[in-house]
Image 1 (cartoon, rainbow, N blue to C red):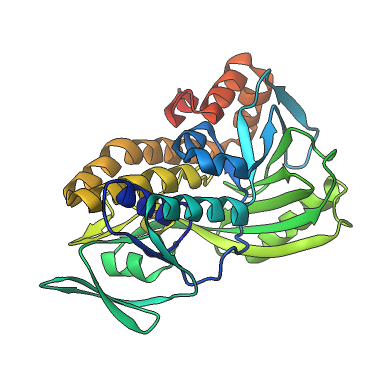
Image 2 (image 1 turned 45 degrees about the vertical axis):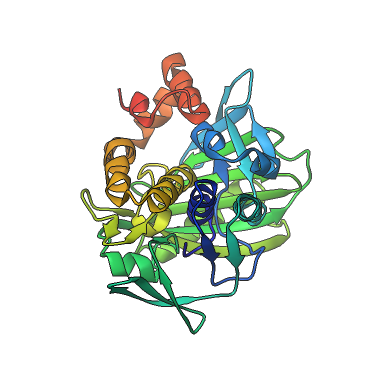
Amino acid sequence: MVGAGPAGSSAARAAAERGGRALLVDAARFPRYKTCGGGLIGTSLDALPPSALGAVETRVTTASFALRGGRARRVRATRPFLALARREVLDQALVDAAVAAGAEFRDHVRVTRLEDTADGVLVVAGGVELVAGAVVGADGSSGVVGRHVGVRIARSDLGLEVELAGTKADWAERVHLDWGRDPGAYGWVFPKGDRLTVGVIQRKGEGAATRAYLARLLDGLGLADRERLHDSGHLTRWREPGSPVRRGRVLVAGDAAGLLEPWTREGISFALRSGTAAGVAAADGDLDGYERYVARELEPEQRAGARLLRVFERAPWLVHLLVTRTGAGARRFVRFSRGEAGLRILHR
């Protein structure tokens, strides 16, 4: 398994639990900071091993929504509908779960080449040649495994994020979402213990506008003067319909496969589920089964997210109105966030 984020660690754990000999490698030293909002919808929580649930730092009962920095309106629930975690903590917990299941983990090991051979897949990792019966690539949206498989990307977005010093009283049990000025853009504030993660995302190629949006969001919320603990960016990419998730004995999962939800760009639930399915397929020798799983379970969600994105790009005010001014819209948002209904419920 190449890459020790949620997809790779889930694949390693699933394969080891089924009796496979699983090696999980990552180019970084662990634990490591990872740019990510860290939002865990109910679908993600359901896919986590019990030992990783301790990584959750905040459970959310209230969301506030603003349109282009305007007046915020709140949606409240009687019980939590979203959880938040720092990725360095969550990812380490998932690695630990994989190791506990019997997988071997090596960090600071970079995979540089893959080659199909008669005996399996030749993997050059950390300058050492290994032969694997199957490879699961979970090395991110621009990783070597995705290129090997030939993943085709429909669209890329740029996310910018700062992690701010805060207090546990800040934004207690509340997240904030701002629908941005540019088509498809939005911003967020996610509280995690004594920190606040503030970020924005919009189409790649508008770097200056994205930076300006983040500055406006921070200033408008009175957060511009907070101490910055991290300041980073990342690209999110989602696949074209029908893009391959397999080449021979090599599978891709999570971001490496372009598996995420196009409207919110939520990817952790896709990573956990696709990684687990890939690990099972690799251990069982049923690689065709992984392709069927993606087509059956994940592609419909991506299509629904793409439809919602098109609506949001044309009429963000309508999305804002439905979620904040109608009980049905608010209930659907909460049900989706809890994992009680799929994304398609929001498109009805």
